[in-house]
Every structure is written in C-alpha cells, then in structure tokens.
Amino acid sequence: MEVNSRGASAGPRRNTVAFWLLGLCNNFAYVVMLSAAKDILEKDSKHVEKPCRESVTTRECQLMSTGSVLLADIIPALIIKITAPLFIQRVPFGIRHITVVLLQAASFLIVGFSDNTLFALFGVVLASFGSGLGEISYLALTSNYPSTVVAAWSSGTGGAGIVGALVYALLTDPKLLALSPKHAILQMLTLPFLFSIAYWSILQIPRSVHRARILAPSTWIIRAVQRTRDSDEEDESLLNQEDDDDDEDTESKWQKTSPLLKFMIPLISVYLAEYYINQGLLELLEFDCSHGFQMSSESQYRWFQVTYQLGVFVSRSSSNLLTIATRFLPLLAVLQILNAAFFTAVAIYPILPHILLAFTVIFFEGLLGGASYVNTFRAVHRDICPEDREYSMGVVSISDTIGIVLAGFLAMPVHNKICSMPL
Image (cartoon, rainbow, N blue to C red; front, side):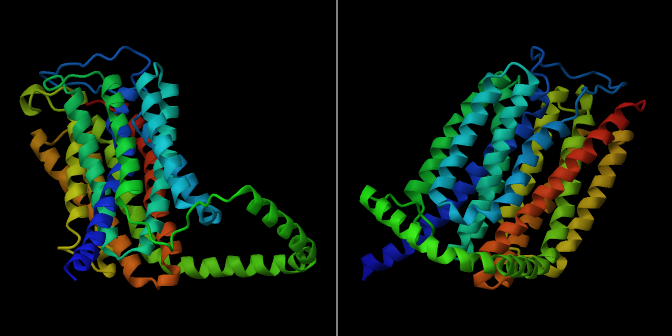
C-alpha cells in the first residue's frame, strides 16, 4: 500500500513540474527576443555598447521602435491562435510539441547568426509561431489534468519571463559576462533540449490525450479500402447535411464563445496597456550616470525588462495564495491603464528623479499583468463546464495576444511622436 500511495502522489508532482517546465520553455524565446529588441534593431551596424551619459539633454531614438520587434514576436502567434481551433484537434499533441521545439531552435539559430535586421526579424517570427502554437496546445492539454497544473503552467510562463530576461541581461551586460548579443542568443539553444525532456520524459500523458499512432502497411491498405466503400455510400447524405451542420457548428461555437467575453476583454486591456509601456515607452526612458547606477541606456532597457518579468513571475506564482475573483478582473485592467498614462507622461517629461522609482513602478506593472493572466485562466478552468473547458481555454488564450498586437501598433506612432518632441 505504501508503494501505491507513493506512486499516486508522484504522478501529480511530476505533472506539476512538467507543466512548469513547459510554460518556462514555451515562453522563453518570446521573452528573450523582446529583451534583445534594441540589439536586434542594430543588426545592420556593428554593436557597440555606449557608456552612460553624464547629462541627458537630448533624446536618443532609434529609427525603428522596439514595437516592430514586438509585432514580429506576436502577430504570427495571433494568426496561429485564431486559425488553430479550426483544425488543431486533429493534430496529435506529440506532433505539435515537436513542431514547437523545432521552431524555437530555428529562431535562436537565425537571430544569432543573422547579420541584418530583416533576417533577424524572420527568426523572431519563427519564435512567435512556436510560442503561439505551444500556448494554445499546452493550455488545451491542461483540460486533461487537475486545475493545479494551470497554476504550474502560469508560474512557468512567469519564470520564463524572469529567467529569460535576467539571463540575457547577465550575459550581455558589459560589467558582467559581456558577451555579444550573437553569442548570448546562441547560448539559448539548450532550451529546446529541456523542452523535449519536459514533455517526453517528465509529463505523464493520460490515454484521453490525442496521440499519433503508427499503423502497419496492411492496416493502412484495409482502412483505405473501407474508407473508399464508405465514402461512395455516404457522399450523397453528407452533401445534404453539410450546410445544416455548418450552421449548427457556427451557432454552437458562438454560444460557447460569448460567455467568455467577460474574461477576454479585461485581459486584452491589461496586455494592451503593459506592452504599450514595455515596447513603446521604456526604451525612451534614460537616466544619467549618477541617477542610473552608471548603466548605459541599453543596459537600463534590459534591466527594465528584468524588473517587469520579476513582477510577472511573482504574481503568476502566488495564485494559490491569493486568488482574485472573476468580478475583480476589470479592476486590474483599470490599474494597468493608469500605469500606461503615467509612463506616457514620464516619457514626455522626465520627472522621475532616480531609476529606482522607475524600477518600482515597472515591478508593479508586472504584478498586475501576471495576476490578470493566471487568475483569468483559473477562472475559466473553474467556471466553465468540463465538456467546454478545452475549447474555452484555447479561445481565451487569444486575448493576451490581441492586446499585445494592438500595443505594438500603438507603440510605434507614439514612439515616433515623442521622439520628435524636444526634451
């Protein structure tokens, strides 16, 4: 009995660890690309780390906003999330996982070895496709497990933020390891191996999960003959029923989707506000040497990203201790919008006396974003009936992506407008 008890308890622990690692690995490339955004935009020129400025009297703006990297890092994910629910159920989870891992590895290789911005952005696009496919797949996979794995997945994605941003900052900071952006990106190739181990070796996959099956050639031939006979007999009836089935399917999906708007709209708003801050405004904040810990503007930007991701990680990992009720989710959106207004004012008028104050508000921004994400998906898992849960998790996962895409389009014109203003 003791052996059985240990085995029963080991299963949930293994699955919790597996989903934490899946969340970490799936979002890692996405986070690294955003942390490296300023470096990616400098691919066309030799990277030179500028020292801090003793006095910041003018704005130093790049021709392209880091919002362009954000769009390359998120639009492909949005395309996947919108189109995947139409066909993804037919694809076994193992095939999806292999595809995600290969896309991630390819993205690191292309961004690392590219010598121009356009090719580097193509690598970012591949990372986005992989992240989007992974998120919609692994969140759907949680429907086969207890709700605790949702918290593990969310904590893992938060861990990806802090680990990815922190590792990249440590590797590239001139006062620390001082690696070039190229070599720092190539160091990330260890992640696809960890990704594979998390799914194939650690996760216990129940029989209810859709898997790929290898059939003998004779079985394929027999099934092909049977399908040919069946199709000849059923073609006429299928043609007659096709229109009715399509109408019923569309109506059924809308009935399932409309109750999800109360989860989706606040989450869209939170992500719109926070990524507008991160990719449109933070690159415009610069503190002089005495008020910025002697860091260059590039280093300041990287550590801003680390601070934000730290806040996300803390809030996503503490959902078991502090759960926010569904009715309070819109409040998180309101607070994040106020943050966006504050940072817009700070970017135009540099009123913050020290970088520590910027770090504090950015940390709070991350707390709000992480709390909104994890509590939204926990609410969906809790409030939606089991038979609709997998579909609902996939649909709601589009929300943060929509918000980020809108933020990317908003960030670029705001960036250009502020850059045209005198300091």
